[in-house]
Image (tube, each protein chain N blue to C red):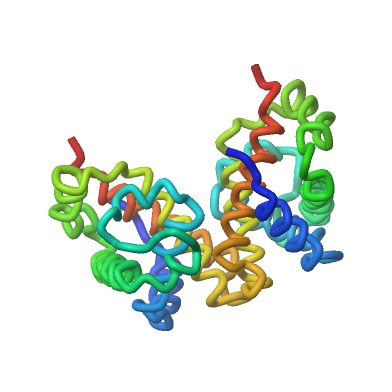
Amino acid sequence: MVLSAADKANVKAAFCKIGGQADEYGADALERMFVTYPQTKTYFPHFDLGKGSAQVKGHGKKVAAALVEAANHIDDIAGALSKLSDLHAQKLRVDPVNFKLLGQCFLVVVAARNPSLLTPEVHASLDKFLCAVGTVLTAKYR
Amino acid sequence: MVHWSAEEKQLIASVWAKVNVEQCGAEALARLLIVYPWTQRFFDNFGNLSSPTAIVGNPKVRAHGKKVLTSFGEAIKNLDNLKGTYSKLSELHCEKLHVDPENFRLLGDILVIVLAAHFTKDFTPACQATWQKLVGVVAHALAHKYH
């Protein structure tokens, strides 16, 4: 799966429009993931996962920042997320299936908060981008 | 058998009451074919699927999307007997249509996104969770008679 020039343009433009709200999008996506796919909570036994949790907000900000970084270096996502990839492989070891779940929730957040942004073409590009990020983060698992 | 809480039934009913089945079904199917282009393999006789614009405007896509979502409405009327409701359709998708059940999961995820875009902030996390559960059990029921 390869990101075309059009995909890259769509993703960059989408994150441009999301702009400073990326933190909120990240937190919202995490909250939705914990509610929709409760098994994902098993990776956060040390977190308060209640509504409005400051820890979830903080973590959402981190997730969003990584997505923004990947979008800003979309020609070399593996390079941009290399350290995060190491972290997930060596320490976090989140099962690869969960990146799809978070990706789905992120798309739902974009749809709910900015429906006009999520045209079918942008939807396709963002979905591919999120898959690519998940692939990079699990690339060093074995 | 799947258990539905009163809250879940309410979230399903209240969303469904406001869904334009024709429009929503058409959009969901079009997005499936656009976002996951390999799903076009089942629709060789649908004519022009050469671009997102062609797919969105394709009358066969619109008609089939409506058909699919109308069937979904049957599921909602029969939440306590989804396997029974979808028994014949499951056999059809296996024996005649040869559709990999993974495609039902893909369509379900797309439907949730289409609903989110339609309902925006009213599509709360609880609402999303309920609808992801619903599309999941529908997909499971449709796959149940596979052999």
